[in-house]
Length: 160
Image (cartoon, rainbow, N blue to C red; front, side, top):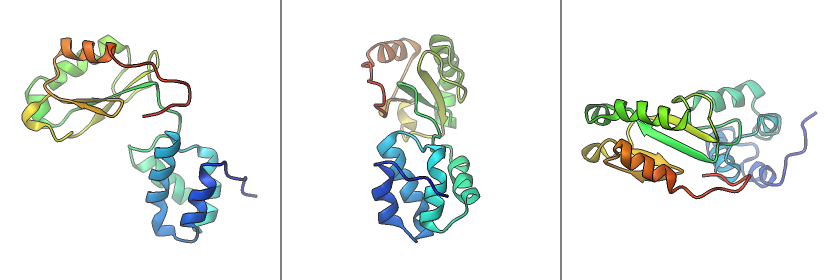
């Protein structure tokens, strides 16, 4: 038996029902709305799109962008591509880990999560980071500290 979808999911299922090729747009819309894709929704998504639960789960877990748990209140994405690496990006990564206590691509610490991304499109202005969806270039350790300190507190359930 497929559980009844919650309020955000129901209209998305109705819009995409029967169109398996629209799985990615549905998942993006759900994550944009809720901040993550609740694993409890997988059976309803699978049923609506006539896919197996394994297929839906496989797509969610394959793409690094999708979350299966609510995001921390502060999400730091740090570019680890060549241009940023060549301009001190890895030293910045070490500083970010030391400053936040969170390991890159690991569990959040004190509600701060740090994620690797590969190119934020700021190669000429590297190293670059994105904090809660806001892009920053030419980021030094001192500038990162100031940016992190200036982040407004988010309410429970609010997401980037």
